[in-house]
Image (cartoon, rainbow, N blue to C red; front, side):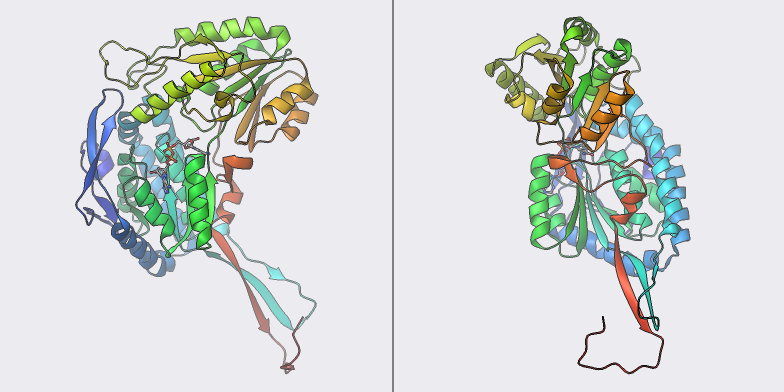
Length: 500
Ligand code: NAD
């Protein structure tokens, strides 16, 4: 297949609009950095409002034209074919992502391979979007509903899982019949072009998926564009608040997938080997750069000292290095700004009186002296009001706190403005399901952590988001309902009486 993804080699990109790659109107570009080496990786178009306008116009034309004319089954088949093409090119896509965000190649490969499941699932749902016939009191009237797409969907994604999050957002939107303008993160823009090229290669019409690159200003132009019916945003709480306010100002809908400060609770009846692995995975996998990071661990006092010793010992053994190598367990953090944030938040935690058990500094990796590595870091003796306990670090920084009873730990776990996820480790069924009900989080894991599936809804409670991705309910977020009324009888309506 002669697609961008299969070549996998280029390092210079324009925007992808209406099936053509074009430079931004201003001709300005920006450079992305490989965080493992600290060196430039590639150049991308710095897009402004005019470029966004072109992309939205192309998406609107595709909606009224070739995409709009395809049957739902035909659209679904194209999404399934796209999924197969992405899986075949997973290696090239994953390499682009690892070279731009520093996450382990094995993780980016797994994500690039598995997104086909999202496209198969939502492709299969495309022709199962059905209206209803409403049994009205008035028997002479036929009333039914039509489920219609919203229009052009603006998709704004972060850098930590670019392909997975782009597909999680686009698959239900396209299955519902919408078209898309995708703005990838300025840190990891390359894989969006792989996805677009592969969509084109399987016959998804030009204009259905458009890609505009740039940073916040480009995203802002997309959010503000009157031709965009809905924004699906995944990213930080701060940006989410600003996007929701702006979209709300012009009455456009939003799905928001934001940050978290998730609790991981270890009870004294837990299988400690499983809990240990789960707490480590929760915070040090992906160098803590996941929205679902289990950054607050609560451990029952009876097992606290023993558990903390085990976790600290394992954290000190984590192998930092080149994320492309299979032996590496933790790569660099993605950007200089993220490294600075990790350092600042560690300093704040110390100021607030927390005690450090390991890490806390930039890490040196032989041969990768300019790489943005950060030591796996663990604090204890933090207080609920400390900044480190309330703000998302998005880095490999864990806070461990002891607790004495269930009610106490429930209040601690829920004592955050976030509500993305929570984990717990216990052998008591009663406690597990009672906590599952009372934890204020969109996802609750029992004796497991950091799992996700195409058919299980995902999203945040409280400040972690609005709406859901994944699962059958995700497609509902990209549809609007029309109610159609038809008088079948010969009765003449009284013009001055409302028909109820
Ligand atoms: P970010 O908010 O800085 O940027 C995300 C995207 O939004 C980027 O494409 C960026 O260019 C764009 N953007 C930023 N400000 C904008 C604005 N005001 N208007 C329009 N666009 C704007 O986030 P990030 O640093 O790329 O990603 C990390 C954040 O994403 C973390 O907070 C993490 O928890 C969150 N996240 C959430 C989920 C989830 O599913 N809930 C998944 C992954 C990451």
